[in-house]
Image (cartoon, rainbow, N blue to C red; front, side):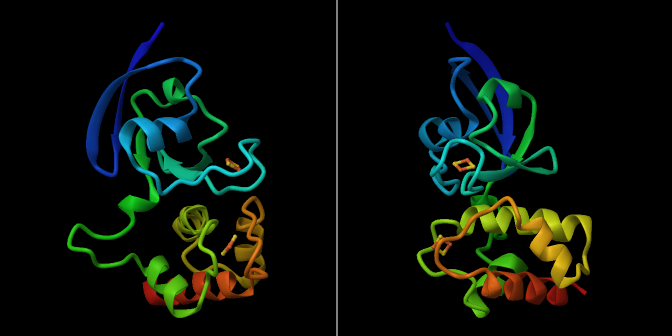
Length: 156
Ligand code: FES
Ligand code: FES
């Protein structure tokens, strides 16, 4: 049994027939071909799969694709401009060495976007609080916090 869903992803419309059990992260990666959202824990602990659904950062392993029917989704692939100009958060992560292996980075970028969308000038404590649901095994978080601070500064 399948169900037809229509979604807008990074400004492009898609319509697919999907099984109701298909998780949103698997839909994005395997059906749409956008592999930026990573899969690690699949139990909503790590945040590697974070994308934006209707303006909110969501762990896409916690949601079925059919629940996203009609939604506007932004993935990490949609952060940069069409001409390739990086988003200020991507610049921040680059300049402040906010990544090492990079596995957590797509999720970190998407949750950082939500932090700045909600509060363009967050304190360090507010940034750390916003990043709480996303895990990184490499960086110790300090450089990620600095990257978000740099992006906030660039947006002022
Ligand atoms: S893979 Fe979704 S939270 Fe870890
Ligand atoms: S940079 Fe390796 S998990 Fe975060």
